[in-house]
Length: 356
Image 1 (cartoon, rainbow, N blue to C red):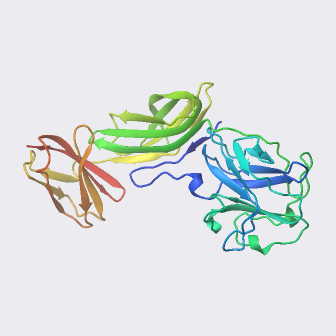
Image 2: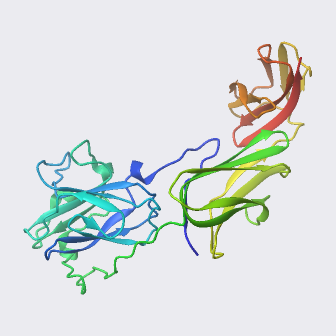
Image 3: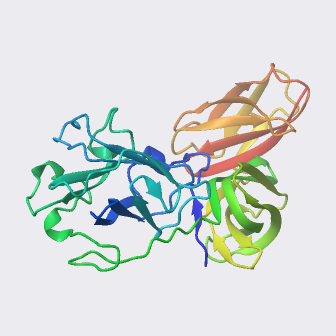
C-alpha cells in the first residue's frame, strides 16, 4: 500500500511542515573515494520542496565556525517517502536536486551535520537534524547532545558495494509520495451541513478520494467521492459537503485511490453536530438584540460565531466560562436567516435565527 503524507488541521490546530522543524533525514553511509559520496536515509515522509543543508562547519555547542563547505539538498516536487535513500555524489543527487561545494570526506577527521536552516545563518541545536564524525576514530565532544549524532567509532567507510560495522548497504532508491496532502479539515457551516476541505501540494496517478464517515471513529462508510487531479505538481484545493451528517460527533477520513486501485488513508478529523436543545435564542426574528440562554452553565471559555446563508462569518466573540446567558448585538446584520455556532471545549453546537 502506498503511503499518504498528511498534516491535518481542524478549528484548533494548524499545518506543520518538515522544513520548519528538524527531522526526517539522516546520513546512512559514505564513500571517501573520488568523488566523495554521502548516502542519506529518509526517516519520515518529506514534503516536496523541503530543503536540508549538509556542512562540515564544526559546531562548538553555540555556533558553527565559518569558511567551510555547504551543500543544500531539495526534495523533489512529489515528495520523498520514508525509507527512501538518496546518494549525493559530490553535489549531484540521485533524487531531488543539490548544489554547493563538495564536502571533504577523505581529508581526515571531519564532522558532517545536516541542518534545517542554512548554516551560514542563525543555527541552534534544534536546527541540527543529524551529525556524524568521520575519520580515524578520534571522538568529538562537539556532537554531544545532538539528537541522532554518531561518533566514528561506529560509523565506517562504505565503498559503494560492501559495508562494515553498523552500516547497512541499501541501494539508492527514491520513492515519491503518491499524494502530498498538506491540509485536511472539517467544520459545520450550518445546523445540518458539514464542509470538508483538503489541499494537496502534488499528486501522482491520483484517481479519486473516497470520503468516509464514522460515528465512533472505528468503523467507516463511504459517503461520496471527489475526483483527483491525476499527476500534477501544482497545488490543488478540494471541498466536499456532507448534507446529511450524523447527530453528535462525525468522524471523517480520506481514502486516496490510484488509477491502479492502490489506496492509502489520511488521518481522521471530527466535528460535533450540536443538539438544538443545548441553548435557545430569542427573540427570533430579532431586531437589535439576540439573547442566548444556555440550559446549564458553560464548563469552560469558548467562542460564538454567526454565519450568513452563504456560510460567511459575519460576527464572532468570546464566551466566558460559567456563562448562562449572552446578549448579542445583531443590529449590524441585514435582514435574513443566520446560524449561531457556539464552541465550548471540544463541543460545538448550532442554532438558526432570523434577523429583521
